[in-house]
Image (tube, rainbow, N blue to C red; front, side, top):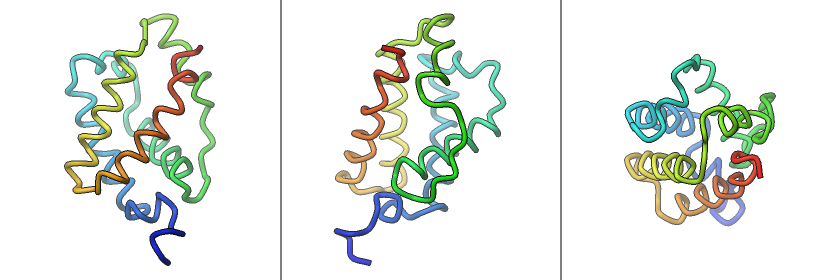
Length: 126
C-alpha cells in the first residue's frame, strides 16, 4: 500500500504501534504533575484499553470503540476538577513526546496533533 493511500493508523505501524504508544503515553501522563490528578480514581488498565480503541478508530483503523463520546466522557472533569486548556495542552504535549520517543516522523506527529486538537472543544465541554 502506498504512503498516499495508507491510513494514519497504518503509517504509524498499526495495532502494535498504537498499543506501545498508549502504554508510554500513560506513563508520561501519570508522572506529569500538571494532569496526573485527573487519573487518581481511574482504572488505568480499562483507561488504556479505551484509549487504544479510540485512537485506532481516530487514526483510520478498525472501529471497535464503544466508549462515551468525548464531551460526555470528560464533562465531570471539567465541572468537578476544572479541566481546562492548560490540561488539554499538557496531554497533547505528552502525546507528541511519546511519538517522538517512538521515532514517529514529524509529519505523522503533526497529523496526530491535529486529530487531538479537533477534540478540544468537546473534551472541554464548550
